[in-house]
Image (cartoon, rainbow, N blue to C red; front, side, top):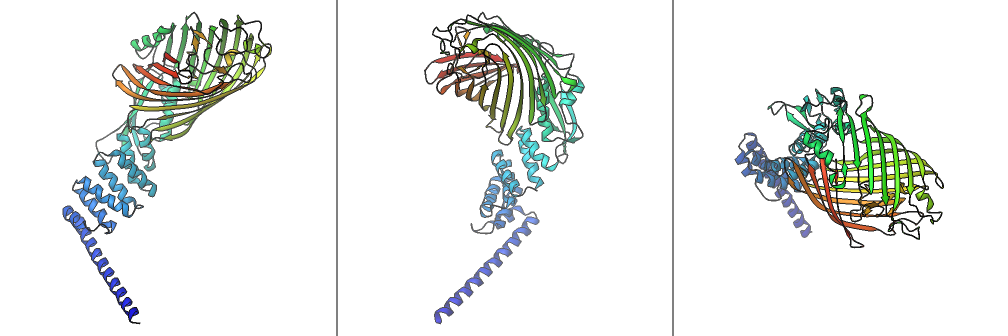
Length: 568
């Protein structure tokens, strides 16, 4: 009985002490609030200091007082203490982000603001603050993502600099936003797709600038900085470089852009290489003056020599001097449906003739070398699967189905399917000093097809399925790289900008390629997985022509390939 009385008295004493401490803490908190309200920042900060286990409210007022005193490191520490005690209270994350912003730690500020907006998505201050940081870093897409949550930014004017020669009607339709209105993400992204589809602007960027210096103003001016191709190019030097960029491999690229300001572009290629003669030309123009609808009419003729001694196993005598004459023509329509996806549809007619074909080919091999005519059509689409502008990461997909008929002995209908996933990541918060690219592609062809319709894994000027440690030619003749009707290929590369000047830019980095190719006939194919690695340089000249130089090594055979080409 006495023990129970003692325990009861002890508990009563503890309750009294706790109540007394709570009363003292409440009185101290009221004193801190009073000092803060009277703008006595130093006294408020001093009074708010206390034991580590004190209420998070003291940490909040201490951090706010330190912020008023521009003592940002102490403010960040106070808000961090509060955030540890009440991790689901967004106040501490938001205010700590303000201190981190003042300390130029934008990365930490963005992280805290993203956590805060997940806890309270209705806080317009956080959305605007986060958008502003991305805007200052030059990440306009991420800025719009958060500004749009609070119905900002509002455009007061839109202008293009320099004034383009492309017709105003076309340009206005290619830029689906105007003033006065809020600039939303989808129209901004759609403008990128539509300007690219016009084909007259190799480079552009959009800048936003406040109309006034008033910090309370939400009005901005959008400025489109355009590089426009007119005639032979954006300048005489640009046109000359574009024309002659293939000189080292016996090729010129005569082109003429933006005829009469209607975005009508003419592109062509003439190659006089004795092993791979080729002439091609195309005309592109927007249908019905609509930048979203672009029609391309093309013609392609080639006279090629092939050496299949290492890639074809269906002949007792190695095929080293096969000749292929090929003529093709057709049309393709590209439709930009939205900022996220677009469609392609086309039709092509082809005629081919083989010479120097061995007479002792087995019946299973004959269709590959049969003179024939082809009529085929295709339908494809591109879709943006994932955009994470905060991380500067994109993931895109593309697929194409091609079907047709080959008119020749042993040939008939065929269907070909291609698909790809492509990712791009810029790991730094702004700029593209580092860039990581990755692309996974695969394809399959059903039915018998001639040699020129096979897939090829290797570096060659008329092929884009690159295994950069495998050459596509031997002594200038095609056919060295493995061929087949089905393939899988992964390309990945990392670029680092090593020089960025007014006339050219140099990026350098490693790459890794892996893939395999096979054919149902077993006469072609790689027979095993292939692995290539090496280093690649990308030199951008005057912002419109890129020179690619690579050295790749086949990890299975140990052989190396140095390769160079130019692209627009």
